[in-house]
Length: 174
Image (cartoon, rainbow, N blue to C red; front, side):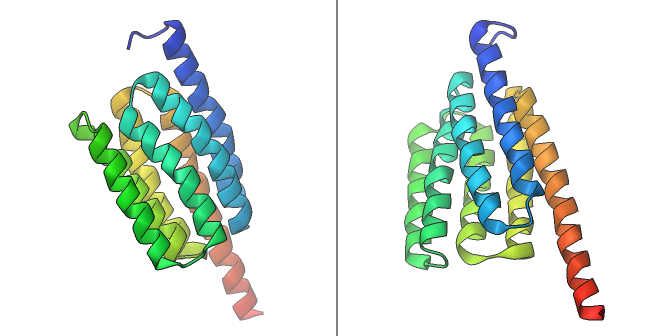
């Protein structure tokens, strides 16, 4: 896609909208608030990736919205987790067009496992792995807002994880 054409600009703006939600999500210490902001971020990312012509990434972002809702409504239900994983692979296979589509697929799988199987620090750790995959995808496709969003998501998430761990240590010591 040619830089600075109207669709490219709209795609980049979508990435920056998602960036705002990502910052809010990972700055939150409450898992429910984190997940709600991630829903909004992934709606923005789905539009962002569609504008870039990245079908796998858009599909994964759309599935992330559904996955987060299902994980909140049916926590730790492995049957639903497996259905989401099957849908994730099916969407990726149906829309696959390039070698780097592996990154959104891996990000979606990591996120699904994190949301259904884990809570607290372990969940955030696996979400950090997902952020690294999304970062690789953003750098490859030239998504400025996406790359910044994932770098900030990763950094904010790591800082929040450190703060949570520090609070736990203080409670145990005191």
